Length: 290
Length: 314
Image (tube, rainbow over all chains, first blue to last red; front, side):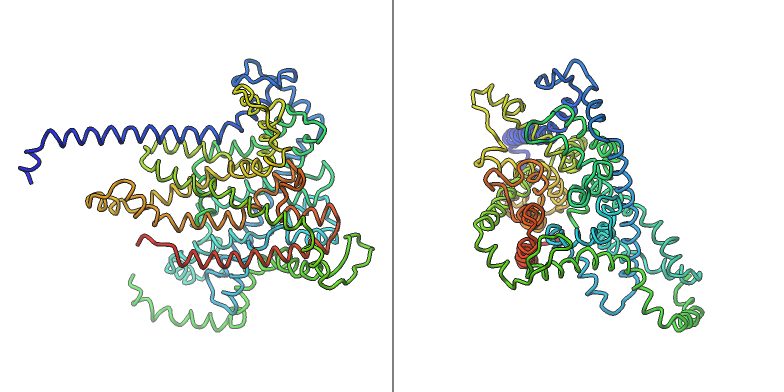
């Protein structure tokens, strides 16, 4: 073996340098590819922010980097529709839905993970199959139910249909099943009932999963469009996503205020993303991989 | 500390407590799952049954107007509608059109960029993920602005290249592809991240062993990476087939309202149109039942396919 490598020093080094160069080229091509994808992903968002900051008579400018910023569009948007109220509504709905889905999810997951009971697999399967029911299939009966409850055009109408999340239940059930049995047994030895065991032993240990679920639920609810479209009527009782739509009209769109409203609707989420970037990506990945 | 030593001491209290709770041990788990079960019953399964029932009636959703039993007439009516067949055809176009952006390109990118350095990878990850957290309505608004025929930056750029401006959302030949592009914009980065994660999970010793055996890079991709990524890729294919057309609902409603000439209407938007524009509960419900049945059949077929055709790395 030694003689072989020694007898061909020139050719191997030549081969290696060629291989190295090829790898360097591949790496450059890889970077180029990712830069193109990154630009494609980020440019629309950048353009939204830039356009929102242009003065009214400069909205059609195409300079990639504007030399003057103006808040005119924001002022106009805020005076045209009750944006603060809508943002507040969105926050209330998103926070409430996050809290409720975590609560119902943790409880249900505990029930499925800790006990065997009659029909448990059947009920679990029914919950898992809910994503087979497209929202448009059940929209009319749900609309009628909300109307009968007298909740049309109110915030509870936007919260109640999101009372439980199948994804949260399944993810939490899986992680609770993986929870070490010895710890549960020890808690039982200490005389802790099932309720106390759940909140004092299991939940503190699942902080990571619960936090990433919370991020996922909050962002998805913040971005939700279908239920508000179906169930709210007046500007005072709706969420920001519907507010954005109010600037889009058939006879001509006021681009500046539209971009300002869109930016206001996105800033809270983008802020969460900047601060908790890794956690946000991880929680969405979990929802995708499973 | 050994469990064997603890066993005799502990056995009694456990058995006693079990006997004491007796009946409630049967009930206890139900109490925990009750809120969730009620929610799904009230908001999903009961409405599903109700939609099935409503599909046999004629009704305009006004509380005091009568519901008239019409048997299967709603079904024969909607199947006679050219609109329905157009919407089903468009649904297929949405799904097929999305596949390159939700599976094929992400798969190629994930494989091609697997050896990028950690710092750079995190930087790109952070950027290509952004569309995923942007609200669909915001995405619709921004793309409408980018694609505006007169002032949109894309058309201005095309003009710079000497190409006449394109009415991306108003031209029946372009509109559906524009909506697909916007839907894909939100997904492409996310799909790339999922496939990259799966790609990074492949055991490097497998690749090393193949390289030792003299396999070329392409052979490694074809014989090792692609088979090991197939279950993740198939999962994304399934998500696209089942949900792809549904994801575009917001863009259709905000940007085209199903037009021009119904060219962007898919089956989900048609349900909305029947229900809340035409106020025809019967038609919408009949179409909902057809959609649900078709959706379930496709889903179960895909589940079985994934079970049969995916390889696992262990």
